[in-house]
Amino acid sequence: MSLTRLIKDVLRKPESIPTPGAIFYNATVSKVLRKPEAKIANDIVTKMGKGTIVDLGSGTGYLSIEIAKKAPSLRVYGMDLSRQMVKIARRHARGVDNAQFVFGDAARLPFKDNSIDLVVSTGASHHWRTPRLVFDECHRVLRIDGEAWIYDGCPEVFHTPADRRKLHKEYGFLIGRLGYRVSTLHGFSREEYQTVIRDMLEQTAFRGNYQMALTDIWMKITLKKRM
Ligand SMILES: C[S@@+](CC[C@H](N)C(=O)[O-])C[C@H]1O[C@@H](n2cnc3c(N)ncnc32)[C@H](O)[C@@H]1O
Image (tube, rainbow, N blue to C red):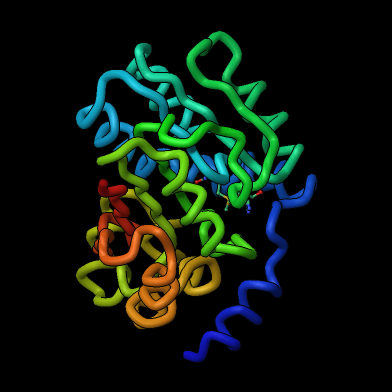
């Protein structure tokens, strides 16, 4: 697929989720993603017990809140470009003092240079209008050796009947049966990750310091800030 076609496809989708979409998302998709996102939260708290984390495109806040609850010494900032999502996330976070939600664009992060230990993002990168700027911002705010874990859809996760059966068993009908189609519409193919997205990453400050791997229901891009 060409870069022009990929950009056109991304532009067809709204960047921030509008209010009715956010309310719908809170009642549906966000609940379906809880189980796989709980695994990500576990991986994060296993890796680090204290520090500061930013969740880009935090949506209804489930992942940020889960991380904050599991590790009270971590400070978690969820950030979203939809005011309604931020409102919903703040409501969910009542009583969880180490999780905070801010409205804003992932391409302009309100954090100081070298101040963040880990950036995480789930299901949001296919919405970003200026992904190169987002990656460069992640690089700017991360401490040396800090990482960004960017998870998004990839239909190849659901490629074989055995893959679908396994995910159906683990996560139920919606992910097992509809995951392929949903991640075709809300993510990128493996080929796009390995060509267009790789080429774009090579133009960011993370050049040469990233890996991609099919992980659970996602493609995970791990980016590392080196000296
Ligand atoms: C599909 S939702 C995923 C929400 C959440 N991470 C989850 O896994 O349920 C994508 C979110 O990214 C947000 N978003 C899109 N572009 C953004 C940007 N440039 N900066 C911050 N948030 C953004 C949208 O408003 C939306 O809430």
